[in-house]
Length: 310
Image 1: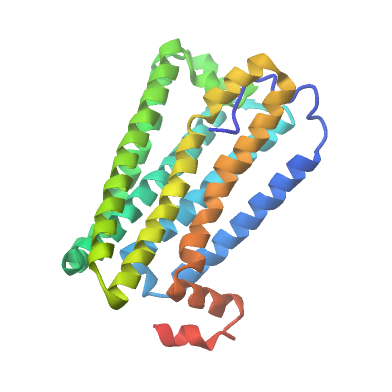
Image 2: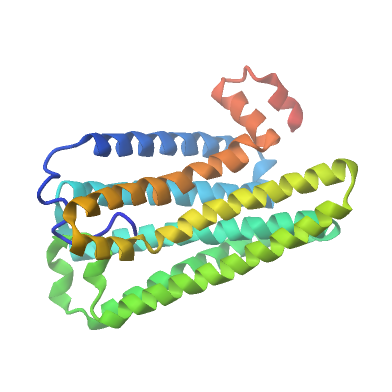
C-alpha cells in the first residue's frame, strides 16, 4: 500500500509530529466520522438494505473505513519509526489489502448495477435482487482476497518459523522473499486494472448509446447514471493508481530522501484519502433519497421531508 516503504523511512526527520502528520490525522478522523454517520443512516432504513445499489454503497463505506483505519495505523508506525512483530504486520497487511481490493471490486460491481438499471431495466429487479446481492458480495470478497493470497502464500512457503517473531518496520517489502514476487504483484495489479478498465469503458458507451436514444424524464435519469459512472471511474482510477505508488516510492527513495517524503505524503493524500471521500459524495450527497435520510438523522428528525420518502 502507499503508506509502506523501507525501514529507514523518516529516520532523520520524523521524530516529531509535523504539520503534515496532523493534517492527515484530522482528515482521517473526519472521513471516518462521515462514513460512520452514513453507515448509521443505511442501517436505520429497511429500504436501503433491500436495494442492491445501497447495499454495495454500504460495503464500500465499511471497506473504506477499515482501510483508512489500518493504513493510518501503518502511517503512524512508520512516522514514529516503530517496529512490530512480523506476524502482526502480516495481519495488518492482509486487512488493508483485502479492504482496498473490496472497495475497487465493489465499485466495479456498482458500475455494472447502473448498466443493468439503465440498459436492462426490465431485468433489473430480477438480476439485482437481495439474494443475488448477497451472492455478489461473496464473489467480491473472493476476488478481493486473491491478490493477497497469491502474494502471501509465497512468503509463507519461504519464510522460516522464527521470522514471524522478529521485530521489524511494518511495510509490504518485508514479505518479499524473491525478486520475482514484485513482478508477480505488479502483474496482478495490471490484470485487475485491465479488466476494470474494460468494464467501465463498455458500460459507459452502452449507457451513452441509451442516453442518446432516450427522451424526456428517461433521458434525464440516463444522463444522471452516466455521470455516476464517470465519478466511479475517477474513484477507481485513483484507487488503482495507488496500487503502483509503492513501486514509485521505492525508486524515489534511492534518489533523494527529502523528495521521497514529499512523494509519499502526496500519494497518501491523493490516492488513499481522496478516493475514500468520493463514495460519500456519489451516493451520500448526489442521491436525493439517501441525502434526505441522512439529513433526517443528522438533524435529529428535523428534516421531515425524508420521512415521506419511505
